[in-house]
Length: 388
Ligand code: NZQ
Ligand code: ZN
Figure 1 (cartoon, helix red, strand yellow):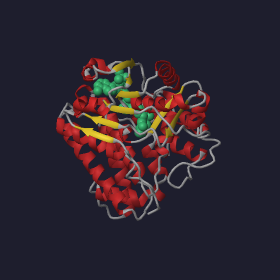
Figure 2 (cartoon, rainbow, N blue to C red):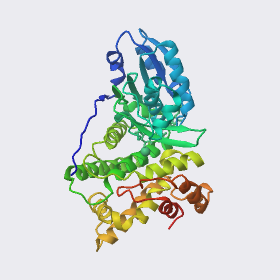
Figure 3 (cartoon, rainbow, N blue to C red):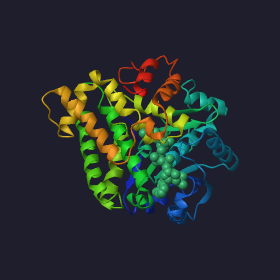
């Protein structure tokens, strides 16, 4: 196991009465900007509930954050923060709203917005200050409520990039499973797959000596498949036990504990962000177009962990490691295809050779390769996406 530092200061308030705690968590003299999406929180009544709890505060609303949150929209919020001297941000929404709010929280401290995008490209340092932020997730799966990372899209430059800083940890995350009452089935299934890929990108890498990390990943995966099995029986209709278990599991999947001291992959996520940007396919669905091809392409490197996953999580035991690993890929793909997750570009009416050329283009000049061995480059990505 490699040396590591683990730091995660987020206060998590969990449960059906968690909203009531929000006023206790925000300093009474705060001038709050409440950030939300395109209206689901209004329709579900979540926004009204929260505004009632904040009636003694000075609150301005900033709505309209879209899925794949845009840089230009974040700048709009940052300008208002500077004009109105806002000193607290509250994000109420899905991963897109939470990510936008994290990025907005540091935007006012860049000397100019161009530097902010250079930071996203890895060419500039982030500010060491941010506007304090609290989050109230209304979807489950991204795990954004439990880390300091954010994914922002620049529509001008056609980039969807990941930013992480030491300061953009939410002060608190209020996890209320009842928010899932209004979440459509396909959004729940998308969240489940996103959560699954978070775990396997930190687990199905290469053999290492991290006993805790592998055991923790397997516990989360077994829990996820148990939830899938029970929830699909009721067509993902609202059930507090399943919603609460999934909410807590998803936060554990990306609070960065799984990856401490052991290699992580993240190539599926990195490639999927380009697919989302170029073809507008939402995050979780873009992941499904990469993951299984990538597992087959990197089969020799990942075989031991695929076989371990097959044995310990899926209960497969074929005659050889290799057959168990092959079966693990096949069974996993079938489970998610059974939930309606597409795994082939042709199912979206796009030719995989075309995609492979256009997406691989984004990685033509990368210096460090993707994947746990940093050995996935332009040619590899073309083959992974072009179908094998
Ligand atoms: O915009 P509104 O009207 O709120 O509607 C949203 C949106 O249309 C709707 N929705 C949200 N909560 C709802 C609801 N509808 C009914 N009831 C509710 N309770 O759902 C739609 C999708 O929302 P979005 O926030 O885009 O989905 P999700 O939560 O899956 O977030 C996806 C974003 O998270 C990023 C992705 O890149 C993507 O941009 N991720 C962030 C990560 C992080 N920071 O750690 C990690 C992830 O890998 C992921 O990359
Ligand atoms: Zn993800």
